Image (cartoon, rainbow, N blue to C red; front, side, top):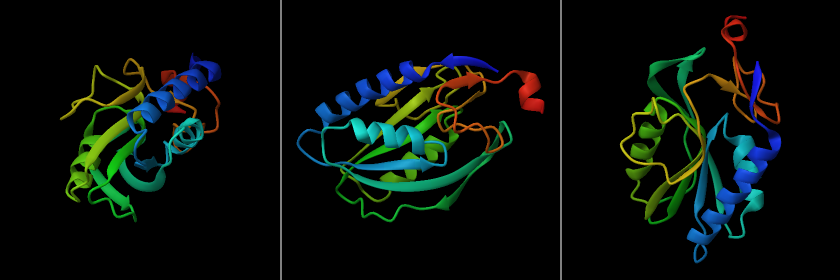
Length: 173
């Protein structure tokens, strides 16, 4: 395992993203919808840096089996907020294949929100197949398997303060 993004680099970029979002939503309070489990650390840090009011909700989906996408998205926990006519910002830890975020955006738009934006800490642009462009991107990264800062491997390593690339030996273990 080797460090890919330092704690300080992450902190600085999250602060920049929060400033951009605060500017864009200075006149109204969006609802931030965090995608569990991976986004919880990023979302907490992002919200603490905002200078605008906001609401918070969470959605939980499953689309991975180990390190590979299963090809199917399963909704495990839906949001509880009424989003019709509201501005929504989906907070995702990582956009990889695009399967999950495409599903979530499509599902939330069914409730007729005023707008839907996507903020992702990590974006694997080379492999993502999206129906839209993410609105706020922390870092564009290669298609390596990464852990830390909320991202896991078999539910472990979320607690790392930095983001690391796992070697094939680490993935197999």
